[in-house]
Length: 184
Ligand SMILES: CC(C)(COP(=O)(O)OP(=O)(O)OC[C@H]1O[C@@H](n2cnc3c(N)ncnc32)[C@H](O)[C@@H]1OP(=O)(O)O)[C@@H](O)C(=O)NCCC(=O)NCCS
Image (cartoon, rainbow, N blue to C red; front, side, top):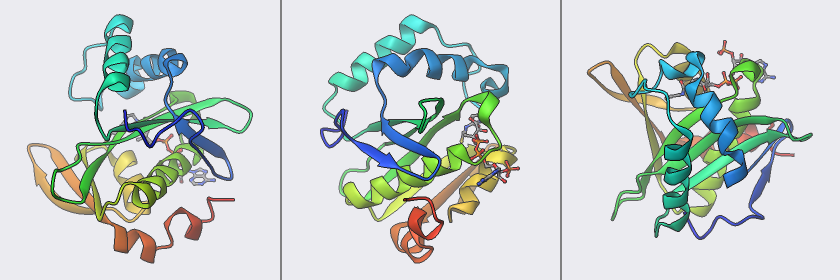
């Protein structure tokens, strides 16, 4: 887990707040991941077991890594989704953003979009990056619309997957989440 993330790390938007993922959040992320409305968008469509999920989290917390896992909730504490920045490229100021997953019953309200924008803001501000990229199934229209709305542009396509990238300059030019009216 990235040492920059602490229990006190918190970004506040108009609808949600984003903080570091904790052990107590895992039942939510596990149930969202195993929901039929989510499973089809993962490369592995096998339901994840609780023991494996918890073991993955313990490894993440203990690892000497720059990876960051975030959890979003509404201001009254309703769980909204998870985001992540990971796969930092040594010698290049690039990393992957993703592991995006929202609470299936709260989709389509713009809550997760705030979580994503706050993740992009925090990553560009704190991690010394010039570019973020992601990978998405080419038929995941909902996710692709979301990424385009933040300024991501397609950078490649292969075997049913699209890659998209967002430069720091383009994100800042678009105003980041502040320009989109998210940060209070
Ligand atoms: C992809 C995913 C994370 C998107 O999350 P979401 O909860 O649908 O995100 P949002 O609600 O913020 O999406 C924005 C939608 O809300 C709508 N919306 C409604 N009110 C809004 C508001 N006040 N502000 C912004 N958008 C609003 C937008 O128009 C947009 O609609 P659209 O989906 O028809 O384009 C989610 O669908 C998911 O977890 N899918 C399964 C896993 C997955 O596919 N992950 C991505 C792998 S690459």
